[in-house]
Amino acid sequence: MYEWSDEHRALIDVVRRFVDEEVRPHLDELEHGDRPPYQTLRRMYEVFGLRDGAEASFRRLVERKRTGASAEATTHDAAFTLIPTIELCRVSPGLVTSLGVSVALAAGTINRLGTVRQMERWGRDLMTLDRVGAWAITEPDSGSDALGGMRASARRVADGYVLNGQKTWITNGPYADTLVVYVKLDDGTGQDLRQRPVLPFVLDSGLEGLTQSPPMRKMGQRSSPTGDVFMSDVHVGVDRLLGESEGAPSAGRSSARENFVSERAAVAAMALGIIEECQRIAIDYARERKLWGHPISEFQLIQLKLAEMEVARVNVRNLVFSHLERSRDGVAATFAEASAMKLYAARAACAVADDAIQVLGGNGYVAQYRVEQLSRDARVLRIYAGTDEMQVVAIAKDLTNL
Ligand SMILES: Cc1cc2nc3c(=O)[nH]c(=O)nc-3n(C[C@H](O)[C@H](O)[C@H](O)COP(=O)(O)OP(=O)(O)OC[C@H]3O[C@@H](n4cnc5c(N)ncnc54)[C@H](O)[C@@H]3O)c2cc1C
Image 1 (spheres, protein in one colour):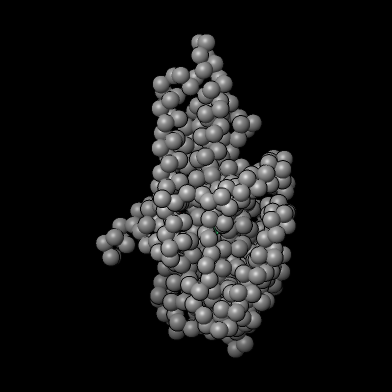
Image 2: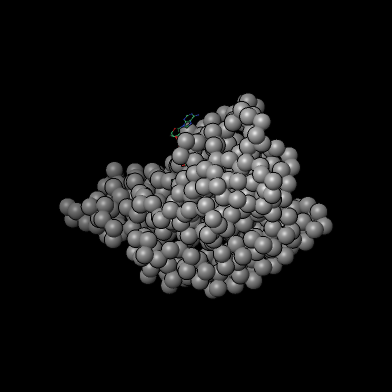
């Protein structure tokens, strides 16, 4: 049975100390958008020496690309990524969203699909957090139908491509220095829009024709800036096309799908952090709040909520542990398994956060006790990285080989 090792527990302790000292005191500024998350995230990199670790991982990735060695050659304990995810999500899940998009999605895509030259041009600085990254696939008219319904285009011209279109709800969009943007190839033959190849390009903030909107106001995860990205005749050379060649027409499509699987596993870890924190707050409150001369923890309807929170916590923790155990053993999750994990964990986080509000009564509804924030933050877990409904579709399709 998988359990945290002594090394893992030591990491949990130091991350908790960091969260207490460096995140909690700034929660209000982070929540109100007065402090974009990057200062806090860079501080975390500094405190834990993650910058050096990122440099070293980057050098390994470059070496692997140069020699063509397979990814299996390196061993990585995924717990060292998921533990900070869980701990940060107890207080500010938006920090994890911003970090994950910049490092796992933007840098991850560049390092996987890019040439060594492109990795060195953009990948290293994203991994060390010297630069902030965004990963843009969603458009106003093509959310769940992200690839088929995509309209943003790359028109071939003599010295490269001209990009046009709009991306929306892009995490880090307002502040990103480097943006990985998926567009459809317009080769001038009039091919059906749905069938056109999807190509990933890398854009730098400030390129002529590229506009990044200010942060949107939104329900939750306010510590993670979200915005629109507009491309109006953005003229780029082939050096900005990942891989520097159109390659296989499906390259862009399959790379987007690979990201979906890793994102879904990370969402379960985020949900676990939210669940553990909401449950902790609810238990403390239920023991202290006295009505009719009794702590409310003695009332059966409150006990039911605390018990259901525990069922959710145990289940989501087991999903995360099973994922970690299998990753350690080199067993990849199927698409159906990753989707099922995300679907269950996201719903569980929302249910637990909502029950925590109920246990706290009026205090649950005001900001001081933070469960209202965690409830708002949890809600997007059921929407991004594929909505609940799209997880259902993905599970059913994978199981029935559709
Ligand atoms: C805070 C936040 C951050 C985000 N960050 C990013 C980012 O960094 N990069 C990025 O590219 N995108 C990002 N997104 C976009 C996110 O991935 C999309 O919102 C999500 O994929 C859903 O698309 P949609 O919002 O257009 O909903 P729609 O696709 O319009 O769906 C509307 C409703 O219809 C349902 N539905 C759709 N199709 C079906 C079907 N076949 N069967 C049954 N029901 C269906 C959906 O489940 C949903 O309930 C972010 C979104 C948010 C809110």
